[in-house]
Structures are given as C-alpha cells and as structure tokens.
Length: 119
Image 1 (cartoon, helix red, strand yellow):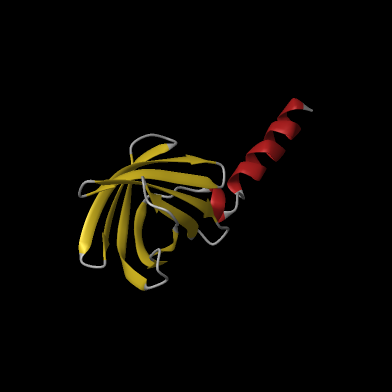
Image 2: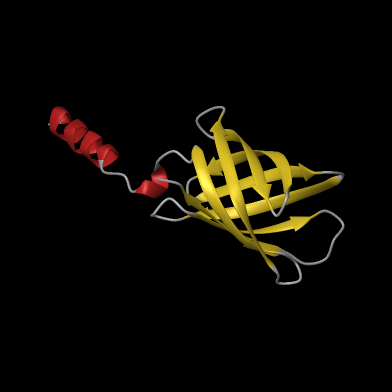
C-alpha cells in the first residue's frame, strides 16, 4: 500500500504545471510606466537556490539588477536602477509567464510588467 501511495505521489510531482517549474531563463519584457507609456526589453533570471535568484533587466535603454524570490505562484524582486530602489511583484502563470506590478521607493503610483519566457 505504501508503494502504491508513493507511486501516486511521484506521478503527481512529474505532472506539475509549468507554474511549479523553474523560473530561471531569459524573458521578453513588455511593460507600462507610471504615466501609461510602454516599454519593452529583455530580462534574465539566474537561479541561486531552490527559491532565490538574481534578475537583470535591459529595458527602455536602461538596465537594472535585483534579487528575487519565488513562493508557489508568487514571484517578487527588489531592484536598483541608478539611485532608485524598486519592488516588483509577479504572479507566475501556468504558461510560465510572469504578470506583475512594480513601483519605485518614494514615488507615487505603479507600472505593469509581463515577462514571457523566450523559446
């Protein structure tokens, strides 16, 4: 009976949706600024442990670096862009894309951002 339960448990792990898989890799970026204007670019997420990572964005002619962490379908990153410090919180979707809201410390408002895995 234990072997049967273990087999079912392992089968369940093997069929996890994309949202439960690794977020490491390269992504296309599509976002909006506080004023609603759009930007695009690329982001690279490098895993540093089972739940933590480093993230680098190249967007709108600028770059930024941060640290990130995943908890189930929540994914967040703190980042520095020049002298500004920001925070972005994403939801990991079943297709592997990350849909989020971002802000900058001391500024009012937020922007939006979608990271889509590059194939």
